[in-house]
Length: 115
Image (cartoon, rainbow, N blue to C red; front, side, top):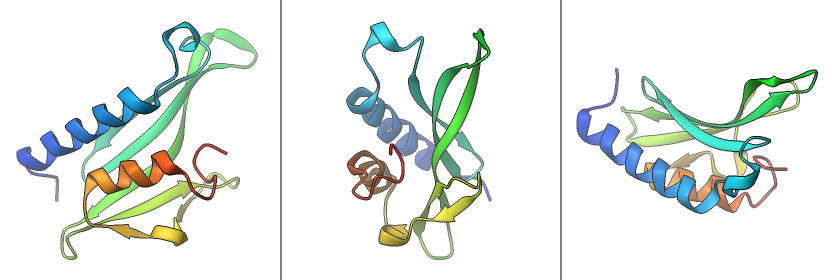
């Protein structure tokens, strides 16, 4: 089940606040940029970089994901491991709000999201 309009607005506000704090300076955004997207009840944080062998082409690389579990009223956090599969973020598997998700990713206490 997709998020309600109110929940979508909360995601947008929290996502934009995260970008204000964490996005790279304007002068390097052609080489590395950070953004987020909403798909159904999941929020993804991803980097955008030039393709290594064709710098005029860009690719998006997912680094973090959270999915709202309505029955529990919680957001489950995932991180992209080296095997390119989503794994539960064990140090903090669930959070109660979307703001907490962005805070966990921003702090990156165990260097899972930004290395």
